[in-house]
Image 1: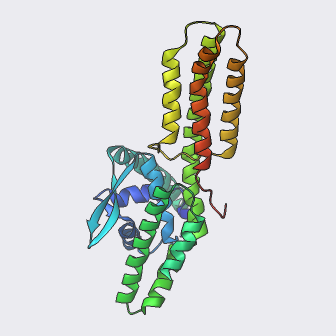
Image 2: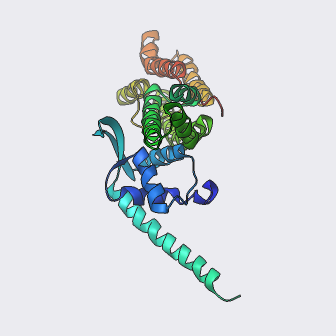
Length: 107
Length: 186
């Protein structure tokens, strides 16, 4: 998928990737690559503006932590982030279900 | 190779020094982690760094994306600050025009506003030149208004009343000097 197609869904993907526990930026990209099967072709640096935007909106929090012998900034989902993720997941499920229904229906 | 990339990113980044340090730290950590992964996969160190940088993306594009965040936040912060300053100034003038007692509380609030503009705010504020010029003009108008009111007050009284305005103008001037850098590739 192109970067353009991914735009608008990146926030939900980042929230979902961080929901199980805090991660640093590189780990987020690795997790995204693994779980999407390499489907998303976006410059890796793109996630940082998105992470910062989500943090400014109060959906993520961040702090420095020692990870793999390095002091790294790790991000975690806040309570508001979990609520936002649930709402966006519902919206996405409705949207993707609608698209599937249209694509799957006979012409 | 990574150092050259980080230097280019630093030149392109907007924002205060602390924010640039944060972004550069995250970028360096990411690039070194990616390069290590490439070396583990059999690439030479130099080739690994090149691949890591290619995957990370153009520094100008990244800087512009980060600057968009700053602008989005700064519009709210700037509007709020401008509204607060305008309201306080008008309120202050109202007290002066009505020839009432000096509004001590308002003077204190104005002085606190001046102090608040000199310290680093909890949110990122990108103070643009036009905003500073507009706010300074507003305060200049207030100053002229007060100075023109000699009949009602003694010189020392007038001076006492305009001290907060002077402080605000000083704070704006300091803010202008310390104004955040704008992205080089915007």
